[in-house]
Length: 421
Image (tube, rainbow, N blue to C red):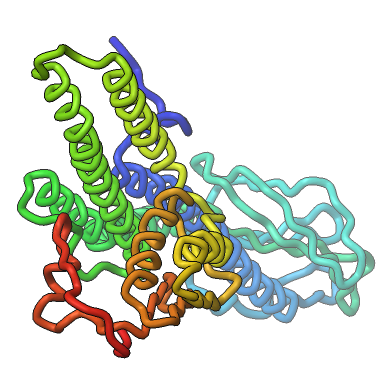
C-alpha cells in the first residue's frame, strides 16, 4: 500500500488545475479553522462576561436586602427578584456567612451543602471561585465581604451560577459555526473551481490552436488571448515564422548549391565525352570549383541559426561602401560615380557574404546601365533596414518588374538612357 504526500516536487509535477485547487485548499482550510477557533473563543468570552455582569447585579441585590436584627443576626429583608433562587437545584444560588458561623442560603440549594473556599476579600473586591455543585455540576461563585450596619463582623455574601449553561451555549454556537464554515468552505472551493476553469480557458484554447497547427489546419496561433497569455502567443508565432524562414532558407541554399554544381558537372561530362579523353587540369579546376561551392554553402548553413538570433548583426554601410569601391574600379573607363549614404546604425541579421552577393548584384547592374551616377542608401525603417539602389539609366518597364523580382527570373535592358531606375 502506497501513501502519497503533498510536497513541493509533487506540486511542481502536477497539472496546473490540480496545483491551483490544492493551493486553494491549503489556504481556505487553515483560514476557516483559525476563524472558527477565534469566533468560538470570542463567543465564550462574551458569554462569560455577560454571566459575570448578571451575577454582579445579583450580588448587589443580595447585599441590598441583607439586614442585621437587634440580636445581631443577619437576615434577608425580602427575597431576591430572580425566581430561580427559589426553585430547587435551578443552577442559580446564593449563600451568606454571618457572625457566629451562622449561614443563610437560597432555597434553590435545597438540602445541598455548598462550601466556599477560605477567602477574605477586601472591601469592594469581588472574588471569583470555581466549585463543584449538586450532581457534580461545575459552578462559578462571586463573593464580596460586606460591613452591615449593626454587625459585629464582616458578612461574606456570594452568588453562584451553573457554568454548564455557558459551556452548552458555547458548544451550540461552535456546532452552528462549524456547519456555517463548512458551507462557506464548499462555496469557496466551488468558486475556486469555476475561477480556475475560466482562468485556464485561454491555455486550453492555446492547446487547441497548437493541435490545429500540428495537424496542418493552420500555420500560426490564431485567436484573441488575455494580456498575460498574448505575449507567449506572439513569441510562439514569431518562433514559427523564424523556423519557416530557416526551412525556406535551407531549400533555397539547396537549390543554389544544385544550380552551382550543374555547370562544373556539365564541364566534366563534356570533358569525359571528348575524343581525346578528359583533361586532368579541367577536371581538377572544376572539382576545386565544386569544393569551393560546397564549403561556402555548408558555412552559410552553419552560420544561419546564429545569424538568425544574433543581437548584433552585420553593419550595412561598410559592406555597401566596399562593394561601391570594387564596382567603381570595374567601370573606371566610363567614369561611373557610386555614392553611398545612410544610417550608420543600420544592421541586418545576415551573413556579410550574402549581403555582398545581394547588394553587389544590384549595384553592379545599376553601374552597367547607368549614364554616370548610382546612388545607394540604407535607412532604418519599421524595425528593419531598407537598402535603395538608384541609377540614372532607362529603368525597368512596370510590366516586366515581376519577372525581375521572381526567383530565377531576369530581364535584359535593351538600351541605356537618362532615366532613373
